[in-house]
Image 1 (cartoon, rainbow, N blue to C red):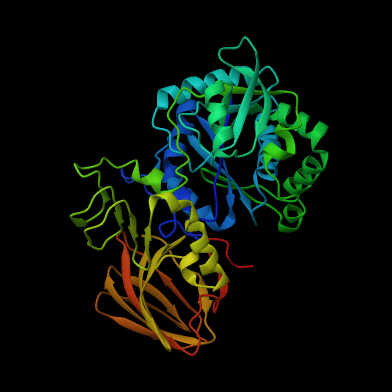
Image 2: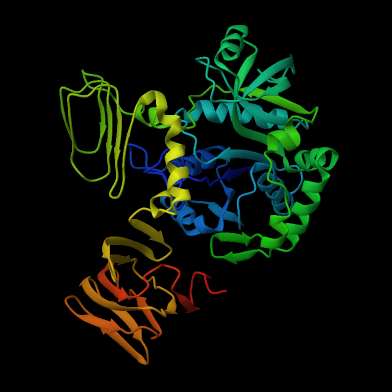
Length: 478
């Protein structure tokens, strides 16, 4: 049995402004319209035709992740989610996942650990490498996937291969090496003994737990306590465990490489026979788009005049360039990035400055996903905010109240069922209702089509944290 374990999350820094903290890289749409997370789910289903697919993610991403699981269309598979209250790196995530897999499927179950933000197009090559890794893992090894380097890349960690295991192309790992300088990376490439560290792993649940017990017992002990304090909630095709916040916070913030792989003597590497990209920069996104005769690449609408070697990524507006060469231009509804391709790794510095200034552009887009649908901020100013709210069929917002703002709701498509104080009413297209500050209220879509409405807020404070929830079908009431 192979149980795919998907690690999903991130801060959304290197692909800003498309990737944000509230909607990080795994949810980024590729040129074909699928997200990286959706593609990862489909890869997982190919190597494990039926059964659980376990996702370890932040609890803030649970409903978005569930939507991507549904969009991947995986008949016969069940979504199992371990929800982290905070980020603690890969060692705690994998330790908790191994204990959960052992509890449900036994110690001999093979775990295939995959980051959710990698792009792999060669499904057959990935499946072949996975089968080989699973065979090595069944012999008690902790297997990592190595990528054959194509250039002296300084942005990746490296794996030095040791003696062959006589199991396909697998060999023991001699050592892991952090990101080298350019001269060292060239030496690694010429030697032929080094592979890029992909961050993907394969091992049985029992083997990983045994090696953690030998080399990182404090992580294993605290992970066990955390899992025992986190009850399993089963709802239809979903299994969900929200990890206990206090127990999880006691786990160290450390990667699985540092905590275990560099200490264990039972680590093997399987060279990947498939294409691989971690989509780690806008240069990588650019390379996914076919160039024109002037080596320009465009995703979205653009007019390019006397422009060469330029990538334009537009999420809705027309972008025009005149007389430029060798630039990256990324346009979203509330932010624009213009960067030289040699400096795209410094985009994270922009995010750092936005975060220091507490500017919302580091965290959220103007359109924000919620379990019930989306809202888009159309305009805001002193004492007012205007939103477009879309509610899915059968979904409803929480029963809630605001201390500092009143709201006008105008239905423009569909029909709304509204709780407004003591009243329970239906609001049709071109009808509206007014909700004073302090009134309990709820919005529900009882129909079969999307409900679209315009919300006009007014008041002295319009922050999203001015909300008191009394009842919520998505478990957001404390």
